[in-house]
Image (cartoon, rainbow, N blue to C red; front, side, top):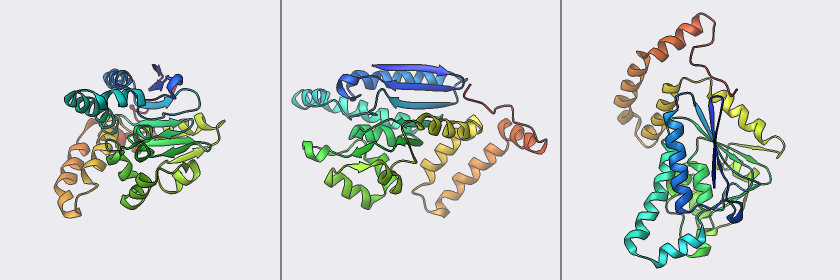
Length: 259
């Protein structure tokens, strides 16, 4: 159902539910959350790759589970929705960079899983769809992350139409970052990892927090937070090592690699 592998300084989480096109159900949500907890506790892991097995990223929520939850106890229905929603926030707020390796389609909740990540690399044959309205529901839990990627106008249209978005178009509108051939997918992911692993661990976590905090602030309102953050990081051991290494023309001690 979920494969977790640590290779060098990178943790790999692979959704392996080919029988339901890597759909998200309550058990998988719990396993993904536990996998992220394990990776966070391992200081040697500096970045994460989230992917789906085979040629599908994720077909979204498991419809069998969704139908059962909708017909069941109202409080349990809401609790299950909260648990899935917390998984998206866990990825979005994860203190280590998360790269989505997208080997094929992502639909509904699968798009949410993808857009909660920091960098998205998809194959050119992939497509994406907010198909929820065609099932009588809406992309509620994933909306905060998708709207941040798409902007309000594009999100409104795509949430309403449920149309398929080919990978090249998804790159043009900002839904994914990079599009590769199937043969070059892992090379594209590795390029992203190589860039991420040059950053200091604390600075990477702070950069994610910076974007989340400042994105919707007025510039004047952001100043106290940004000044405090810069002052804090400037006095950190990471910053001292990074600036010293730069001046001494050597790699900083915290620079990592995929191997």
